[in-house]
Length: 135
Ligand SMILES: [Zn+2]
View 1 (cartoon, rainbow, N blue to C red):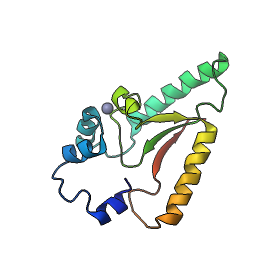
View 2 (spheres, rainbow, N blue to C red):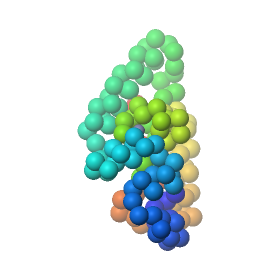
View 3 (cartoon, rainbow, N blue to C red):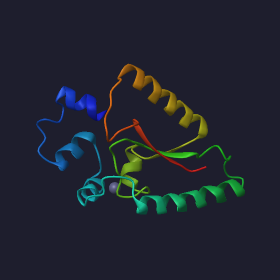
View 4 (cartoon, rainbow, N blue to C red):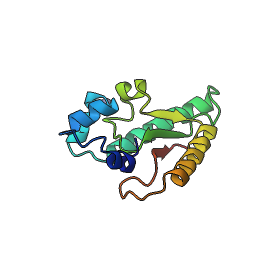
């Protein structure tokens, strides 16, 4: 849920700690524990993982397994910081997805519509989805 909207609605006002918030959002325990170690954003470790994912995708393209536009970006809901971009628990819960070019365009269009329907400013969340571009 959008942080501004959720705070306006008081959704989290009864929550006392990060574990409660993680449980409410269905975040995996491994990612919540990682967040508690002050990993509050996409960091150098995540970007190193992204570089390895890019290499894997490049090999898939070279070997003709996928089209270059099939895996264009890693998408996560804003506010969710995984313990790893390869976290199986987060991937199973669809908190981390690798999307095609067309899917990424759809997400950007969705964000634009959400911004029009829910106009507000939140310092930490300029977008509704975190995007790591792979192309
Ligand atoms: Zn995790």
